[in-house]
Image (cartoon, rainbow, N blue to C red; front, side, top):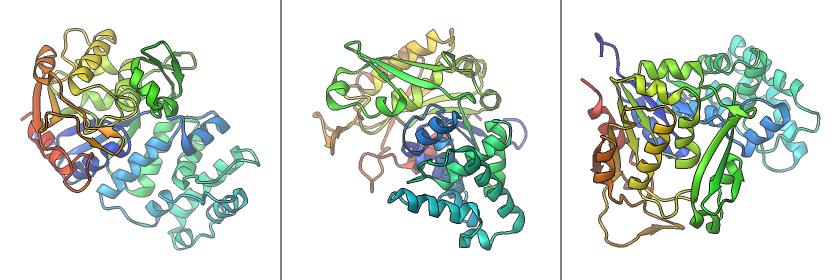
Length: 378
């Protein structure tokens, strides 16, 4: 690292799965960039995406709010951006939205005029774009503001994110992997095709037991191009971290974005760190960390990783019991033949106590952040 420049960590991640790690890294002397999926097809994002044909912003907004929390930003703008409308009657949700869009909400009324004006402009841009019967129920005000900014700035999501960060006074960066969005699909072991990120991540038990054989990501029927801001982030990274998060829907698809793998491979300086999840999920029933590494390694090679190794380190939770232990519906993710799988990829296995002592099945963000900091190149 040149001079006194803070080390730069780029985190390819899921949403809630990496929240604790994100928060802990915000307290470290590092620059942090989150790279999030652009193929979210469920929830409030789905309604916006289908209504306006724009990039899904839910994962972006969630990551920005996590950054705001980690940086101690708790002002009125952040409160507005983190608000969600009622899930009750559609008419009530529309009335509640109007309270924000017309500047009558107490949080907006006491806001500095410039900030209030910008937020109202984006909310009104959003309202003007959606149909009169748009369903506002359970909608995120932050999603509406970010989508309004996206529309107001010539559909440039990077500019919209820049404006959103300035409104909330967020220092960390958040970028979608591709600025063009994308459609994710999966083919199961029996040949069944599942379309849509929200369907893949919610596989029923029978499909989950069958397992995912392959995934595909397209944008308008073609390969999804990388966001230029992501490429720039990867070029300056000191550590590129994959996970934690849903393996087949939040982590692995980034390798399918055109230009991502070659950009990572070109940065020979950065550590490349894979973080194994604590538990299996609907996508990964029956898999272990070693098998995930093999799947990721094969895709890395197929996408232009060439001779470069995909990972330099693999973080995995220590396995203490000789039987399968479960938390609720899911078993702990085993490590399998981790040492040999890591060695074949040229990576070092780092096995430790990474489970949160207070929240079973989740990562201890501080423990993960401490190890990531220790692995940064000197």
